[in-house]
Length: 160
Image 1: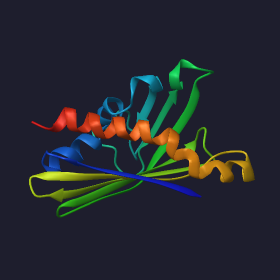
Image 2: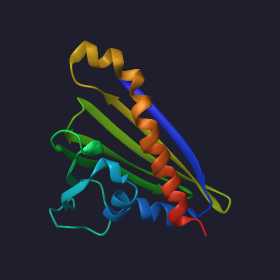
Image 3: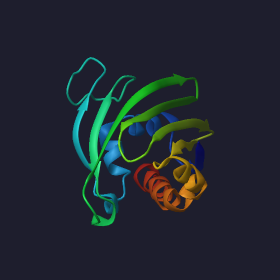
């Protein structure tokens, strides 16, 4: 499988950055408008609707229509891991249904003085078997604008 990684330093406290990324509203605020994201439902690990925090076991059902082209693509993600320690934290969401054969996105956060390092790591595989695997390394071309936007928007929303 192919891997994409990107990091940014945000001049905002670790707790604030971690809390922001741990919510449905954080997901919505960090998704570019050109993705045309619609959240259909969010359920907590015990099935409760619209939990305040996306804990391990939470499920997000959404759809996207990038650039308004083609039909909407369903995307179901489950938070499979979430851990916070002194000055570091991460959570992982795995696509259970959607446009990729495999998608595992780990969101990592590290205290850095008065700021926070935000690191995204995506392990993915495109559909279409051997052809998808062959073009996998070129996914960076599509992922870079998306994650550049997410990181720039995080800075805009959280830095003083």
